[in-house]
Length: 510
Image (cartoon, rainbow, N blue to C red; front, side, top):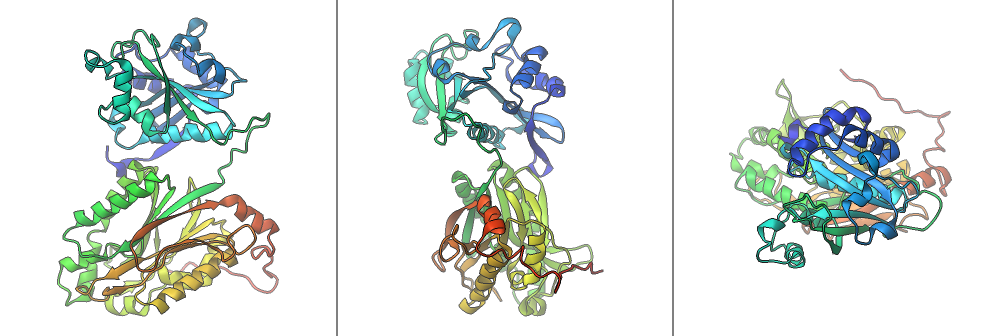
């Protein structure tokens, strides 16, 4: 399954999904009896609808996580799978339970490798926090144990899996998702011949749990941004660049970032693979790689479960005109594009780059975002139009050669954060490329800026890098703080505009 063909949708399971669910369960659980009866699944959906989480691809069910509410004290002690089952194979949901019990997680084998299981687990964890539950519990099969039973006791097998000396498809995955093995359970599922009836009692502890009668607000109010201050270096091939990109995407995903951000024209060193005497032909040559980068970065967004701001790349339209395009690769497999609107004199003179005509805010699962490539952030009207469309985060991939050029971009970005009461993420490149015309030197100090008010750092800088050093950096963005500053801040720039004196409108150029 190619990631650029995916259109993933995370949602709750509904009654009408059973025919697809049965087909999926029969395929995945052919060794332990296949699918639950339809009545069992329908009752589960009725009793605990939020706990039945599904992923579909254009309507086709490809992943499911089934859960119930249980009493923590009861099920954090040894038990059997049958303890969850009532008469007529009805799974018992305790509406007053203080923990969630993970019944099953199953992924269509054709979709494995895209980390959909991790996505389902993350959704379960978020639901656990929202419902203010103590923990997620699960009885975990150990299906590879039968291959080692002659040599290892179950406890020894579990220890070796934990040390990654043995791979178990279920236990290894559970441990990678922060679950802890609490104890070994015997005869948990006697018909499970591969596990020889053994199972692990697993627990993920909700450290935000607060004993209370009320349910916590379930609206997502934060996002984590990770960005790459990218070192421009000579590359021998497209594969070398993509390997470096994936290295950073993997690292940022490992820190549970919602976004991975790259700079403007980060793949420009590939111009070094062609003749530099004609700059227009060199930049056109660079544009021939863009489709490959789009395909691969979309794959990475899905596989690593992270939204990628793909810096910017050169793209030629059907008439051969060149544009500098910023890309959003969502982790559900969809893409968006934002052309650079204002072209610098150097880009216009040496590369014959054209300015785009469209400006938009894009929805993501971690806030509404805008993208402005470098020079565009120096024109305040653009950011104001995006703010009027409820933008939360403005991403500014940039490339500047000198410190004074960098400071223009930095100071304007800080102004945009204050004027529009939003977060601004500035991401640039560093290093030297003496062999490539117009890209011989770089200067950058990437940063994340906030509005300037009491809820934010005193200098309105959430984070910044060491200048001219390749590195990654992170910032946690709190959207509730934006809501407060917009309505109750020391000043309220968006609300206080004198629309009786001036207005801002956008035109639709031909």
